[in-house]
Length: 379
Image (tube, rainbow, N blue to C red; front, side):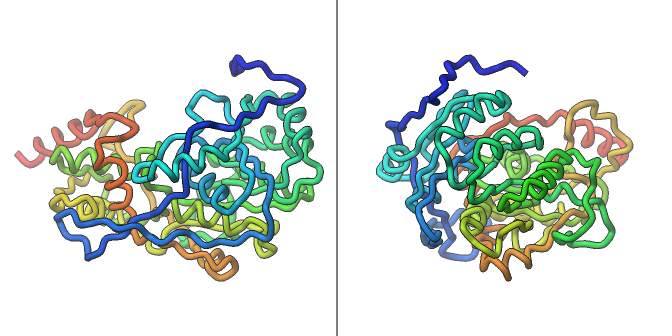
């Protein structure tokens, strides 16, 4: 993997950013959502109290989860440093965020520029700073984590973003934190990281989200549906459409990450984090329409085995039942998701896609393959 071309000194270069980011506020509809857009109002600010001010390192932090998490940590009074390659802007103003909030945030955030795969630089730079807590948002492999642990022998807590994708596929759902895991899953690196943290004897906490959605989502989750709704197109859904899944809002996830900080109940524990309710694929399509103010869409069911989509992905979710229990986080952390599904989708639409911003252009190539065959069968 190519190295980032930066000057990596023995004494790492930190920068205090001159621009601005801020605490985020969610939004709630004043009235029940109908097919017309409604007036929006700010949700209350998060109230979480950590035991003391901490010197926190966030591995990543310039995309999606990290954007919201870093704001909450700064709001709590912690000294927050983002470790990134410097390829993306270190701060960006969130949609709906005031100029003052943005300025306040970015005047406090610190940045350490480097490549986490340059293990020697990681050891040198981190050991010279002596962070109290690490939030690892973008770690994928255990070998990326070991140099961080070696550099910080007095680390108080390592908080890791894992995935509910580590669970072994099962007919018995929802998934609980004690369920069997799949060592061959595409998230096996996250499993190996959890094992490494256990073997090293550090105080760790692992968060396992299911599907994450919300403003600035870089994965085409809700955006996939919004593109089709805006274009007035049918929604192609594999098989029956009654496959059950689960989505959690990024702001609720960020709050869960904050609530495990300095929390004895989170020590060496795994927590599933997602939304309160489950939803079918067809129900999700309808929820997206309701949240964004579109008419209920036409749904076209198809058999994926009848098509050769090549390397293109025809649907953004795994074609199976996939959801997890969040009871442990609710009972032991006192955490509870603030957004219900339609409300959260409305928040995402209103602050992102509805403003004309999205991560990927619409691509209806696979849709047209499905619809063409459907029309032939109907005729």
